[in-house]
Amino acid sequence: MSIHDSARHAASLPADLVVDALTTEDAPALNALVNALAATDGTGETEPLESTREFLSTPGTDLALDTVAVRRGDELIAYGGVNLPEELTHDGRVRARLQGGVRAADRRAGIGTLIFGLLERRAVQLAADQHPGAPGYLESSGGLAGDPVRHLLEARGYTAVRDFHEMTRALDTQIDERALPAAYTAVSPDEGHKATVRTAHNAAFADHWGSAPISEGRWEQFWHSHAARPALSSIALDDDGTAIAYVIAQEWEPRELYIALVGTTSAARGRGVARALITRTLQLAKASGNYDTVDLGVDAESLTGATRLYTDLGFRTDKVFTSYQRDLPTA
Image 1 (tube, rainbow, N blue to C red):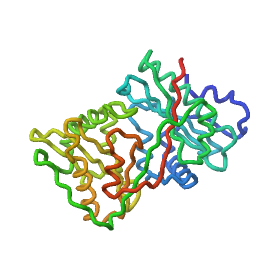
Image 2 (cartoon, rainbow, N blue to C red):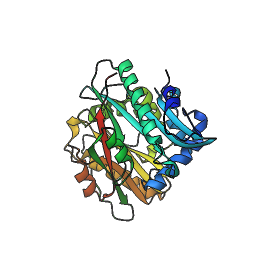
Image 3 (tube, helix red, strand yellow):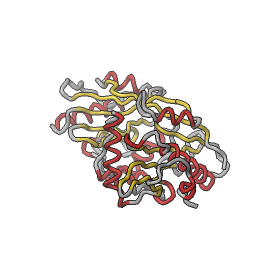
Image 4 (cartoon, rainbow, N blue to C red):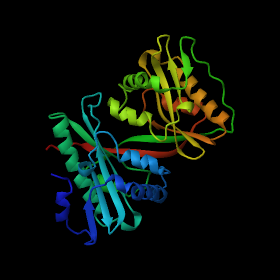
């Protein structure tokens, strides 16, 4: 049964609204809505149209079942989606991530409550189908401090569990040289490195809060995404050509390079490898002349000390987002 079937019974919604699912044809409208929400809420999380198209073709996502669209006539005014990694988290739990948004002019009309109810129901169904009997949790972003979505989340039993810092560094200041240990070689990745970097990523994040191994299909989409900038990314290889650390760069906004992933396998930590790779990417970005800043996001409570490393390299905190969770309801 579609998660939208119960929407027709929803009370108190404006009568002129239609609730159904997103389709690939919604890409332009969804892109406009996402970027409008970024402006309204001050998140800066805008994206190009091609990235929205990629979101609508995420491997393992059934748009008809896993997404919600709320429309007034031909206009998309709200959306939602639920996503479950194909694997359990490293501590054996289902992680169901919910996302979405409601246009500012249509908030406080019960639309967000409806969307979360539908997404939560679908998450329970997906968890039961894919990981029967496994414990789990629902997760959603509470945005920046003061975001009204926090009241909605708290009313539904979610609690704030983690802060994530968005950090930025200008490229008009000196970038100190950082040598890579002699045992490793730094290169920009190509297609031949795709599999070994995925293996390194899954190993590096095995002890990170809330992480789950990334599947081949989703890694394929990430590796070849519209935003990917492999020439500005950096990986460290050992003598066998195996990746032991990586810095993967993307571009979402003109003149801004975004470091999407940083990781070092446990055996190579504490040797300055990540520092050397980040420095290499900063130097490449500056030398290209195409960027003014480099940005990245970091778990404020990361056990690897990543926040201190980034601060040492000249990054400063620009925004703080808070993640909310609640236990996954039983079917």
